[in-house]
Amino acid sequence: MSQIRLDLPQLQVKLLINAMRSLKVGGSVVYSTCSLSPMQNDAVIENAAVIAEREFGIKCFEKSLIRLQKHLAPTKLYTFAKNSQRGILVLPNLRSNFGPMYVCKLQRAA
Image (cartoon, rainbow, N blue to C red; front, side):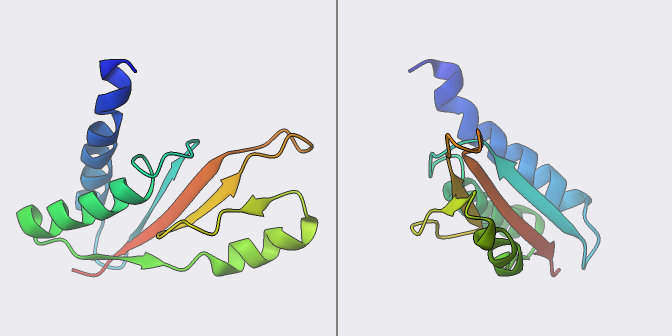
C-alpha cells in the first residue's frame, strides 16, 4: 500500500475539522466517501470529533440519516452495511453500477 493511501485518513480528518470550524452553531456538514474502509469512514468521524472538541472547543453531533435509508431501501437498488457505527454505508451493487458510498451528517452544537 502506498504512503499516500496510508496518510489519507489523516488528511480526511484535517479536512473535516476545517469544515467543522467553518460552521456556525446549528450548521451542518456532510462527510462522504466512496470507500468501504472503516479507517476512512467511521474512524475519520470519531477522530475529527475528538480533536475538534479538544483543540477548538467544537462540539458536533451526528444527525440521523434513517429517513434517507428508509427512502432508498424500497427501491432494492441499495444495500446498507449493518456494521457502520456512524452514518450509513451503501454497499456496492453491480446491477445498479453504484457504490460503495459512506455518508455521515454532523451538526455543530457549540
